[in-house]
Length: 153
Image 1: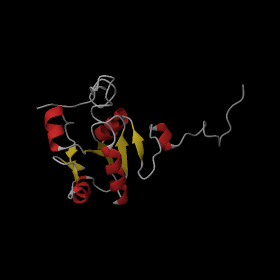
Image 2: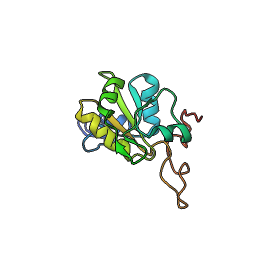
Image 3: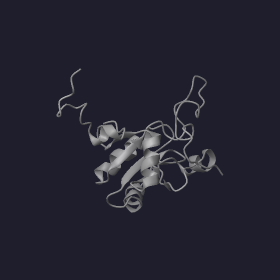
Image 4: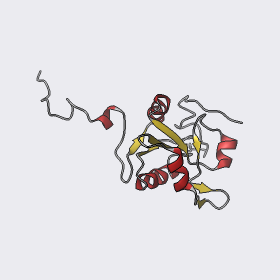
């Protein structure tokens, strides 16, 4: 049995590979809900929940997360205060961990935060995960299904 060469990728995984970061175009990468929770708990990241106020109020929220809608209800128009809000919410040197319902709006928000000079990640699966065969969310992935901290009013 041969040992891997010291410069082979399998011998020295990148920091991103060790932490489960998947490469992405236009932002720092995609992370699992579990990885995001770890960074949040350790103080390395700030969770920015980009869902609407109504979604956070009715569906649930992550304690300690910054609520900063990417798009506003009704009409789902872009939030004109997003740039100012994300700059104010994510201190220099911290990771912005973007969360939405299913991991779509959070990609757009992560790209915008990156354009603003913030190290931003999309949380895969979002808060509720993908819809199942019956169109219901919360049964196929997501922050809640993974048993991570959340509350509902």
